[in-house]
Length: 334
Image (cartoon, rainbow, N blue to C red; front, top):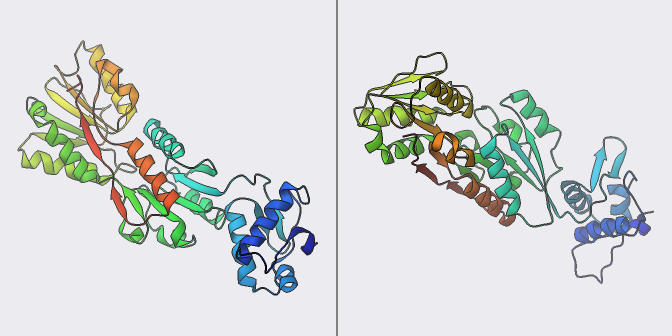
């Protein structure tokens, strides 16, 4: 069984662990083994070809990361997938799905090589869900992209993964400083965005930030307050807008699309025009905001660029940190 599936020769220039990987792939391609079949054990291969267990384990770990082999404790290794055209498998763990995350995802996929498979999951800001997703997928991927969001105490979980295969996305956290990261600087992006719009903002009597907390980055609020104090603007922070009367002469900075829709509807009901009676700035750009209510002004990171940069990191195993570009887009709502 070992000789039939695994073929190793000293005449081959290829490393032994690579010959094991190619042997398994060839055996699947030739129909010798198929999905669900058991493969020879690490000890069997090591003994047959006078190899160290570490050499065989290295090959099996890569086959696991590519999704070709799976392990059942106490029973051994089995063929988990016959999709041998996939060279790399990426675990993409997002916090939640929304329009701009979809844009990021599409840009990431478009800039990966064709032999890469991406599996996307969502932790929904739940530490238990996050923990389960990580623990059940250790060793099954060639790269792990983690969006930690506002969760804390993640380092012990992420340390279960190979350090050289982990990439952190969207937030730079002190506890994860040893990993490559592509991040937003929420405080700086808010401050700089409002600075670009200062001339328009200054015509309003008061600037209102909706900041419900929880999953929303604290940096948005600190950058907002710092800007308003520096410019001596009259401002307030509310956790919600829907329960607060809206007033003419105020400008509203809204972090969610649900808040945006609520405010647009309430303005229409009063017969008010955005950009004249009240102002609106929405956080995070999307194509719909170009047309909703004749154009919604946004402060947003460049999600397409973030996806493209992430793909470059994963494809080329880059390290370090990159602050993603943010921009202020002026439209009629201001």
